[in-house]
Image (cartoon, rainbow, N blue to C red; front, side):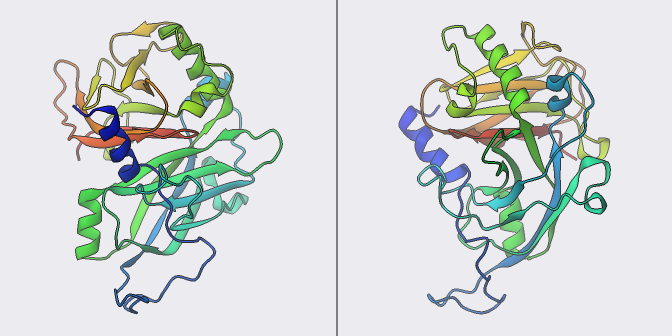
Length: 294
């Protein structure tokens, strides 16, 4: 188990760090930087998707409005120390019809620096509207430490990743559920986002299109998170995941957390889930798709 100080230190090493300006020119692969170190640059690409719960929160199958959204790839290392640091890569999301079939908008960055990363890569979707934003800042893990090690040894494109977006309506739905489960918190509008929370789903394999797993539980290595399971319509607290596969984790106090997570599948389940790292950070919704091993 980690204590609060350890949790904050780990959070600083795993949350949503930003290291290289998205507007700056990346060095050519193989060209030493000012310190004589050779960059390790790879292309990173994926799609921006609306989180599945957004439809539930809206109560309709309404269209996705990703206009005025920024997508970034960041190093989960420095954001807890400096939330305003710069991303490894980032740009305004192209929301043209041709780029967004079925509401999923493609994005790509030709050269993301891997040198110096330790615990993973995270995408960030952020609404840049100055008035009446629709989305909260949302992070999604796209590579863990093992994947980074493999990519540094044999650089190759990191493709087919997902950057999920969580709407303000969804945060409000989750906030009301958390207040039901933990009335002593009494989060006001936007308060859960300000605390920072993890929106998790226990799901099947990528090859199965990530079906939600009912009856699962999760465990984490820290005591500084409250883990809650909503029922299917978020009107009551359950003891395991409902048909949505959803669980919610909220820090017990201020500051970020990072910890190891394990899944406890329902009886009779033959798929396996390996231990993963995930965390929370203030003013961020962290989406954790806890998918089964291939």
